[in-house]
Length: 154
View 1 (cartoon, helix red, strand yellow):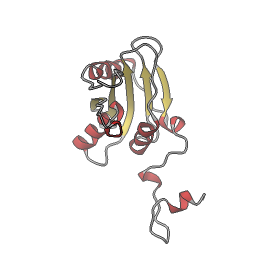
View 2 (cartoon, one colour):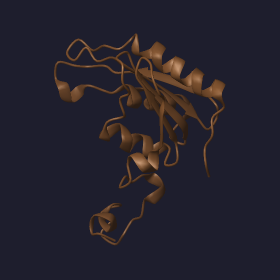
View 3 (tube, one colour):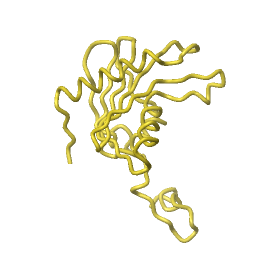
């Protein structure tokens, strides 16, 4: 099923993502990112990137927005669309970790991303992360590990 957004929904999401990047904590990269998630319930959640001196502990804007949505709506939360905005010119697509998390909660979600100005890029989460896996694909084979069959090439 194709997910469509009205022009005003798209602008509301991009505006919320732009507002969120203003709160980013990015003292190491100076690359501030904001994101806004629209859930299937019609609620908008935003997040910004938060860096840490121990770089592995940094959390991207997309995941912060998604985690805020899960905290509010519960583990059944599903993403209808997600927008990503940066303060620099030129769009920045979600990283691999964020693509996987987007897919987990929105395997058919619409992904919008743009820089300060310019064209809004649009993709489906399934196109962004074609080999992703999520809760909806889980199986429990005989050895008990839910991903064993997938890892075995089945």
